[in-house]
Length: 87
Image (cartoon, rainbow, N blue to C red; front, side, top):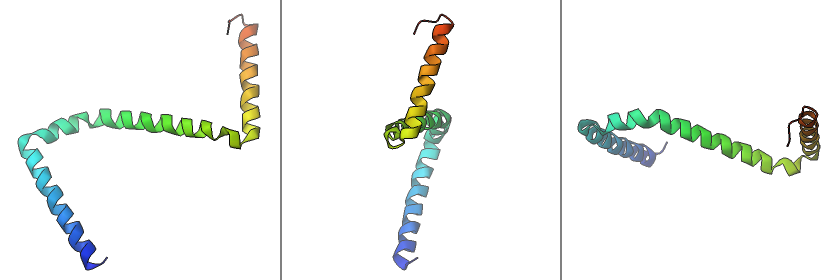
């Protein structure tokens, strides 16, 4: 690391430490900590939906998987029709 990077990281550390002290003394940090599990759950759900959508959009790149998925859908439709469940 160059001298500039060391100085910049030290200044950033001081600023973050100062902001943390301000929030901690005013009690905001406890409110933020209480909401973190909900935030992480929403973040994980968003990431999962994005990943599924991205992989589905790439399905055209894999014709074998596309054919397999279509055949599975047809088999499922036939199975439910044989059980008397309308689709």
